[in-house]
Length: 277
Image (tube, rainbow, N blue to C red; front, side):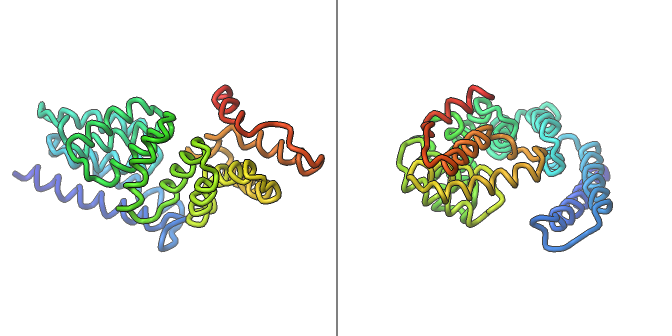
């Protein structure tokens, strides 16, 4: 069928454009490229993927490819709609596809819908309990929900089977912090910052751990770094400004530095942050 063949060629072209776009990322890419050319490349990738899907609307992989491109563009709600459409392509029920359910769960997590994320990830896990990313994101979601002991079970499994990664170490550190295992929290947040010293979440967790352990000078330096990165990025990144407790911790550490005392319990920050959300 020529339409199917054309769809395959278009999908391949979309994948090439997407790969070029990722490889030229200004922060993590392996080569440099003019920003306008890079923008044109990801737009072309989406056009090719849409054309592939038009040629063969029953092909699940084309939905997944288009959603990946949209997520790389930061269009997470568009990606969600694409993934939801993939649940019933051409009338075929794909609700038992572990990969699709995992992608829906990861997308919901990115959008902050943790209950929906848990629903999809649990479904994916019931079909394929050995998939590393499903295990990892179940850990992240349970951390966000506050199921810290359960989250640790998933995250420690992910730590054993996946390459070292800042998000995994950050979530493990968060679990230990909320379970009042401060030494392990300090250990994992430190490891997270070593892997990515621009992660605001990891830096905040490290600063709170240091504060609760009485390492106030170290905590002040750490929270200053977090605040600087936070301000420099201007709240445009999903990760940035997601932690409203940064300014409160910085304010109290500044007071501590100036007055030589620490009047506000750090344990109250979690409650404060939830109230501000």
